Length: 350
Ligand SMILES: [Zn+2]
Image 1 (spheres, rainbow, N blue to C red):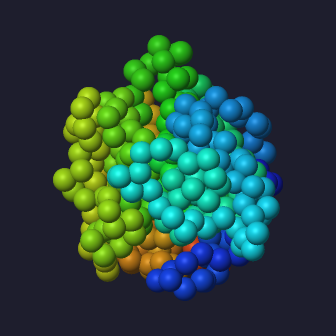
Image 2 (cartoon, rainbow, N blue to C red):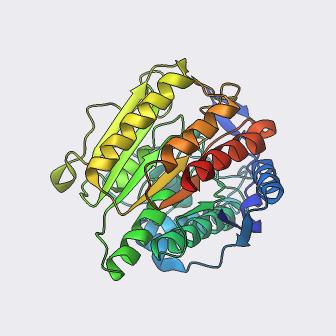
């Protein structure tokens, strides 16, 4: 498969984040990139460095204030007296707060939904490079050049909203890919309809928020029940979109401890709904944190199970942009991605 990566995606190295009030090492490590690249090279995939996508693709999803904040926050933060080496908010935006703050401390609270998205020195470079990978993959597929492409995005993206970071995510690469694909599909005279299919173990709350009032992007997410799992405040079945987007958002929460067979049954149901929407293209938000031994595990998917996932998605027969989301069992990432891609390609070539 044609794959896109960028060397800058390893530059994001936040020292810690807060879990239940305690500082902990960030499991979203740069070694994830190395592990995945090794797997792609061993498989003999066509791996390319993503070119600079330019600012327009990011600006089609994210607000100007948020993009400026991501780019400048770290340099401004470390000039503050007694500041930590990474931006972590100590205020948060509430519904009664009506004004955009000037101070970087206020902006951190405005643009960061939790304490799991620290901004360190290389964060902007890494997340920008990751979105370049997603745009390159979207362009390869939406232009008709490739039936499928893989974007090695790191840090991940699906918890990031239009103007909000959260849960290890800064720019929403899947949303940026979907938006870019829509533009190219329309240019080719194809129906500008894209499905985002999120199979990470966490709900893709950022992607849901970006497309909440849109009927040209159908967002389907399979994830652990948010009543007991991050992001807690989104991902429930009753959230179906609003306005023109009503009915174009489908959440499929599953209980903690869901087996591989039950997860894959939900995947087939999700794809059946996507088939009825009849998109021109799928953006697959692919997380490997559904793996049974992931440090954030909630589901029981095995390494061969990711092969079954790949086959099932490919059998939908749609052009597919694969965007890497989570997956924190670094020692198993190579095997899990290899299994997924082998399964996907076995079904595609049939
Ligand atoms: Zn996840």
